[in-house]
Image (cartoon, rainbow, N blue to C red; front, side, top):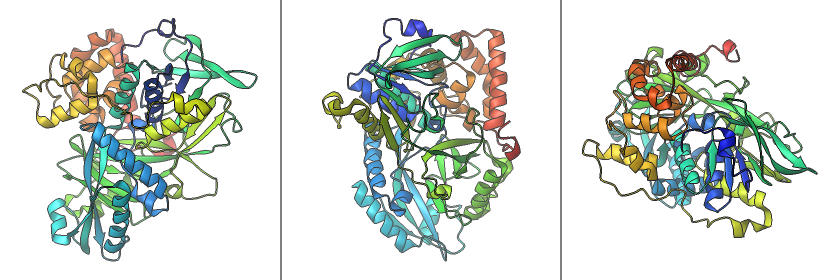
Length: 530
């Protein structure tokens, strides 16, 4: 990606597309990737930043979903397991295997035998055996801080973990390499129609209010929980009803809760799975699952009751660590776009499968999982393209990610850091290595070069784009990385072309946003919508 040119300049010689994708999360990015890779002239627009919504605030898991298998959705689990394996093979360093441990306690569900049976089916669907059973004493070798009271042993299996925002950016980079135009902070204000059929989209630049119309006979609405386009009546969207569900997480210093694998258990209060796992030098504790009835234009924030819910399970699973509110580095909350049948199920019992509807050139997607973005993309394009899709779409076996160039590893970078950079940047790795200061940011895995590269090449518009999505420094450092702001200014202000006043405005904007939606202090429920 490049700096963000004016809208009319960007589209001056290319205002007609085969497909326009609205929504810059993982689903939209996947559609742009498959469309451009198939030779279709493709445009993607996102009204906020890329991955601004759910796709930067997920649980970071690339998995088949044991819970979906347990709830009678083997098809969803099988598809996700197949995609999990593809992603791990194609993008090592970006999507990596992670061992999961499920401790079993006397009198608690699920018992070892039942869970091992479920894992047997899980491994069968995934065509790879990862399961094993640990005796209680061996379980403590894996997780020394684990509660031993009533511990019968633990089941081990494997799934995957990723940096979700970076996954979106890598997929968008692949789409652009095949000719897609991808633009953030650009809003679709209206779907253009003639005789009821889609003919294009009216766009508005979110920064200077510039308008432009583009032509396309296929528009795909991949905006998730934000799916209410201006002209999308319930009838045109196929009658889909989206139930926004919030999942929140706590980020803790790794030394306060040192885990080297994901530890999962069913919360005794409501029976839903929660877990602790290592991520970018911290430990993440999540997740909740409840209705999100606040304003979707505002970034979601964890509530005090959600934080207490997660701290209670931490106290039960890891009693010797004494985890408390004071240990929280940061928080994040994401909104899942779940399609509901309106029967009043609890949030955790809602079906997680995606739904796609097509109506005269408008395709609407709702639901779905991070792991299955490629399959969702191909299904949406197939439906939108109609009978010609088999001749138009590229092969099912075509890779999402291009090979990473073979360049020498800088001697100051560890093998683990090199693996991460290769996965995160792929073919853009040589350009990243041209940046000065291939040295780590204090207290983080990220390099200063990643920050300047993002400012030059990844459409950074606001400071939070840089600290919360291009890198995750705002989540893993105390106070959102406040102590780094002077150094960050030295490295990035001139690259971004910001005046001193712009820098201060962006710092104030970031501080307010961080305090409201990402800080260690949960936002009171009564203030969520203000």
